[in-house]
Image (cartoon, rainbow, N blue to C red; front, side, top):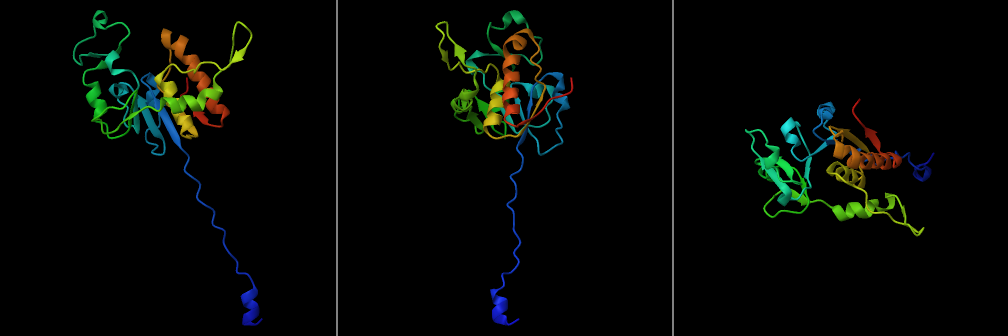
Length: 212
């Protein structure tokens, strides 16, 4: 075969497939006892926690959340027992120094609103989350028989965290330490959180829960 003919023969080429994007995985951590079940040694698993969960000893985190208004927080002594009569009704109890702890975190801290002078604080993207999830809320039938879009359906910080993880494309979501077992949580928050887990599962997200 002449050189001219060889030049006409196509060379074998190797198809190079683009590398798949790494699977986005996250664990949402609360303070109920199952927080210890999270595989913290798995560095491919992000850890998001909330409020004062650092008190139980969560060993690492990639994000932190406290979405409660600062003016509604009451701060307790770290050395004295809490007298419930001194806690204002409707306030969110936090340990002394809680705001300083949040302010000093080296990773993103999501708050209800941004805070000047807080290097890693970010305002939680509430409207973006609500806009994305509007299509999932149950419709409501009025007394006149019309069926209309229902109100947004979220009632807890874990719900907001879960919704943000779904919005950001996390395909494996673990939940530890969020039992929603007290009276108020069980009545108001647990049905909502389970509804959102169902939404995630229906979208193909892998949901991992601790053994009961």
